[in-house]
Length: 195
Image (cartoon, rainbow, N blue to C red; front, side):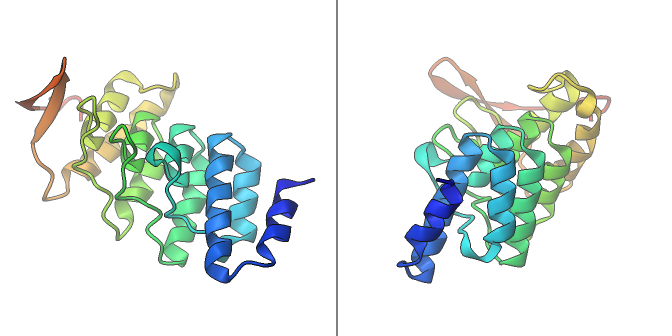
């Protein structure tokens, strides 16, 4: 039986709030399994019946998983739906490793997704630091300079993301680096040729 049909049959006896939770969990599962087509279908058909800010195992939201798995189209659709339904899609949340949607998108050279996240009216936790000392700015600069996790030429576009992050007035110039078991403060001075 088709999973969507199962969800449809289950949600007949649920109230609207419970239906949104069930669809939110299903979307998280589909993002975890890298099911791009199914994610797009859920986001299109059940746009108003799906919670986008729901958090799953290890603190991952559907948007975090889509960013982690490099699913650009799904990320853009989630962000589009979040603006239409006034739902912040957990932009300011972080997972158990301290990663936010913005950090994961920067690490995977997802320039369009990063720019869309930065343009949302919601707090996207730009100053969040992961357990390994990475911030969104560090991830964007690393992706720009070294090409990030994906081996392609998208890294050239990450310059725009670096500049956009640096344009925010409240961004600290002090970031944290992880050394062994302790955090050490260090001021990062980014070379102008990198950015």
